[in-house]
Length: 463
Image (cartoon, rainbow, N blue to C red; front, top):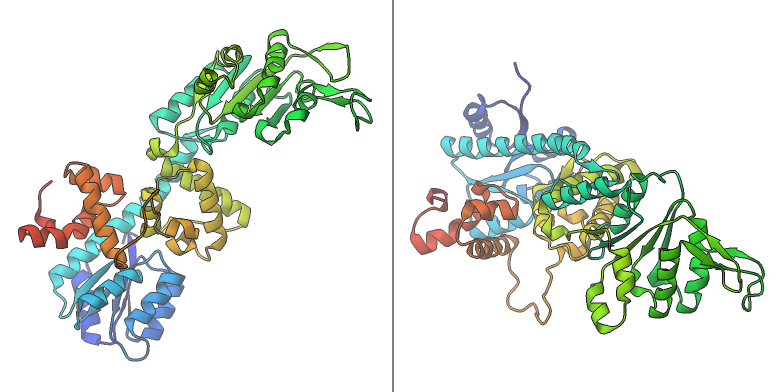
């Protein structure tokens, strides 16, 4: 017999209902574990960590809602379906808020049960395949220390590969957190001077009066406090690469001296009359628009043209959504190794939250969020509760305030789905892709609205 595609734990104090479940889905490629008490069911879930849990709402001792809360904390990766003969809208909303993915009313329809379980098994199988595929893709889509498969990043990788053997100066632009230093390191490591020093100067962190001595060094007695000779970063990087991060913050008075050093490949220490020859490749990076600074007279045009013979522009994360799953897997592996933990992936709701986020801080924000989540997580799956609070809390736009009644999570999801559908012209296929969910899930989110407006179940609406 082939290995089961998923494990299901059914928890119900009604023996006849457990028999019905076994008969209804006994021919599915799954392993079914039946538990007749809440205590035994919880113990089995925590021990076997199943893919799906069919949970009775009303049982002696702990009820289903209590078990649901514990499972959401201890095993958030499970898809929990509540079963009850006492359906109410309030309890359904509460169950969804506490982590349930679906609701079945008793007496259970065999056809309905088979349909729901079949969908959940398919989704569990898809997630398992996705994890394996992500690991394979991650290996195939690494470029030095960078990760990407989007057309924008593949173009960046190709450009770096082509010019690395030849460049003398380069300008890397992009928003904060897009990985400009990683691109600079890749240029250096693929150049003929890969074994030579890679020296970094963050221009925004240097006091204006110390810039010249940082770059070119000084001799003893050049100024008060100069107790001995000091080598500058140009000399320290001699034969290798100097990376000037946040170049837009370099004082205007210093830019002409940098230009001369680039043109002549020579430096003179502060307080010395001796000129020294250097052989340095210079990479500059900025998150500012240097052409606008030139127009305002705060950046030298000749220095810009000297540096920009080779330009590399890194796209923000919002423009390379195809890379999000790869980056998540990359950081889960990285922090798993760092914290000595093993992570299979994200729960569906955590994945949905990260997919919807706009990532204004780009890859650095994603790295920090996942680093924090990996530290907090006590299991193999990262859940919403593990993510930083600023990601979990609703974000207000500039000039906006949160007003009106507090909405349930399911209602927020429905509103977001409807808004996205409207923005995409009513195309449900594109909407499901944009939200990172299946079309079946999208139909379920839209179901109430469509039924109210058209009197037709959303699951019957055509694309």
